[in-house]
Image (cartoon, rainbow, N blue to C red; front, side, top):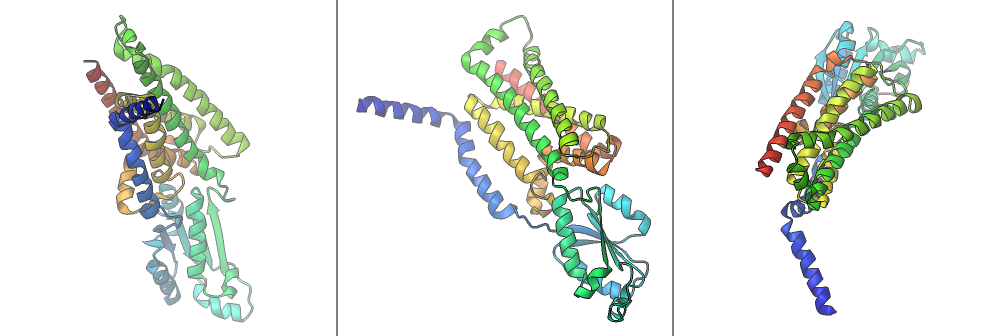
Amino acid sequence: MKHNFGSFVKKESLHILRDKRTMLIVMCIPIVLMTLFGFAISTEVNNINVAVVAPERTDGVEESVERLAANEYFTFCGYISQDEIDAKLRSGEVSAVVVFKSDYDRRGALAAQGIETTPLIQLIVDASNVNTASSATAYLQTILLGTASEQSMFETRMMFNPEMKSAYNFVPGIMGLIFILVCAMMTSVSIVREKEMGTMEVLLVSPVRPVKIIFAKMIPYFAISCIVLIMILLLARFLLDVPMTGGVWGIFSVSLIYLMLSLSLGLLVSTIAETQMAALLISAMVMMMPILMLSGLLFPIENLPKFFQWVSHIVPARWYIDAVRKMMIQGLPIAAIWKDVAILGGMTVAILGVSLKKFNDKLE
């Protein structure tokens, strides 16, 4: 009995050790997680891009701007005119704009005399990203307001998300996470299961071409993903009150490209994984962690070290989440996010081409 138990342990150990890809994932994931949590991830928001509107660049204004530029939380992007505020915020060049009124230098004298005035500082913030908006507001108020008497002279106006609802921020991110996991995981496990059971060989000797077999297996998952997409959009709009001012059809079109990209990733995983467990690990862990950490879903990309900011460029969810967030919350049309759409389309073509080539190479 003891001998049989020992033989079983030995057999299972050899089986795991022979699966090199699974071992690589099991060994690398803890390292990646420790690196991300230890060095890359921070809940603080750094390098917030801020522009200043100052009709009169007085000594008081210059002093406040110097104090702002010297703070490590902000990146001073220069002076702009009042007419440029909306365009700068919508383009993403800045996350906040500080507007100094003409009586700013007289704030101390006015407060001492008890004279009620309109706010002498106006803060305009892009609130489509709740984390950045809340941090920018708190930090700027601390830096720009020296005394409690000046609080009444400060006006804050939130753009795109005035009520600071967190749903505005996490709905696009959750969509980016769900579609990658659902499409990639289902497609990869389905194809690998066929190979494990030996039925893939039976399918491949049929008159149907191998490429058609693969696409035939992907189409049902694409249809299921479309149904999931419709359900998510309905819940976001009618249950969570998330706006879709950029147009539902634009959001749906970009999502279809992302679905094709996710299915292509699943096909790529199936050419790499030899077992269903390996396919699950790659789909659920290797894809999920970069989405959580490097896509802007949980943490602002601007807060990451430069190296990880560059790495985030190859995470498809980053471009999808950015595109959907701009269309849903900022109200931009699909033409205004052509860069995100072009990158997603290019990734889809590249990954699908590589996946099909690797699949054909395996057959040969």
